[in-house]
Length: 535
Image (tube, rainbow, N blue to C red; front, side):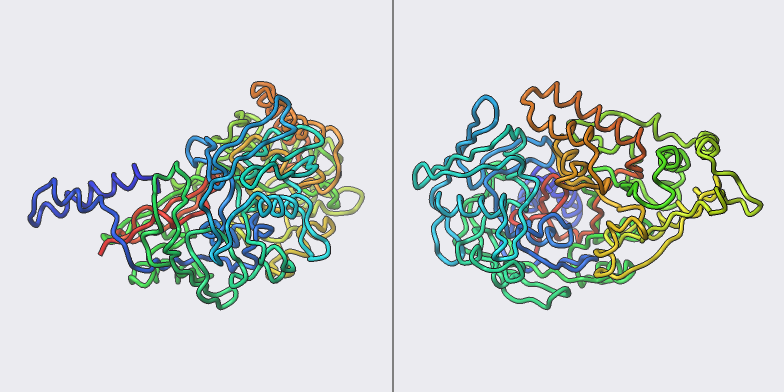
């Protein structure tokens, strides 16, 4: 939560205190003044697997590592503005094939190692190239990486074989977190463990029960927060404890009983419980993304674009919102969220039109049988899918989609799996037609992240025209041109039935009113540097 939000909550608290005595000025000032001390108790619904930068693309990992991993660049969660962090400044050449970064001085890792240009070069090489000898995958988001050169102990230059316009924004994400040399030298599985993660961040590891609970404490000599946060010195809290509770009723019950301070994943049905509590509030973080099903066009019965397009027309998003969601969530209007700089309104393409869906299915040769389902050449129009484990509304959402699509004769067969099984089947078109995802970047280049066949590859195959479009926008320095390309991409995805946007995602927290100043980066991952607790 930004400082201005802190001030709003503080003013409310001051009004309440005034009723029991004390001057308004004194009490309001006290309520607005951060207090040091206390441990923040956080509950989440998904267990983490890897806290290294290479695991940062998964929310279950990065809701923790975002408070630990520091980056060269900071991005404002509301304006998308980029500003210095571990880099003091940077500049690019005209065609965005070279970036020069001056590093912030006086920064150190928790083991005492000083941050230098050599260390940053080693990090960028490992991030962009990976290291097969250590089992570390490259981060394919960094396009056209050539090399990093050390210009001086406090300056580097990064070179690309082709333009990479969004590189500074890429450096603001958890996958670009900077590690100490001792951690960089470790194999992937060892880097993933909190005890081995040596960073420049404001918290240091204390203990871990893998997948259940992890504890961090404040680093007292920390003093290099992004200037945009206006936070000199170390964190206010003594540390935080991150615990997993998979059941929604357990999470909200623990919060209301005063045994947790902040809970991620408040179910829409539980939001009223938090709102009615005099000691708690809801904090809704708009994640700037559209929650959608990406379509595996290799799945049997989905090879025909007419069938894929029919799925969007048969989806009643207003019913999904009314039946499953709350006011915290918006209705999707494109494959990008409204806050993305490249968003264009595609609501007309997403309008509920069961008659249009039926006409497309008729045209594709699928005829309605006596049981209400459609058949072609003796086979039923069946689509298999596994229910996502990563979204709190997935179970009910898929069940409602099965009802909606049945109305036009489509048999959506739902399957459940544990985490290990789901990771194996999510790209297997024979058994799983859809992957539920949110495009987690506050940048036009989110389109490349999702649809480039060498990056996210959500279509699960190479589509040359789509690859060319999403790459071109990241090689074009003219923002107006990038936006035009982004509009083309969104039209292409929808017209080819490659994505089924459902709703605009939100991270819904239940928070004790003694908690102030929880911050978040643009994709909603929290950080606790600015958090403080009322006594």
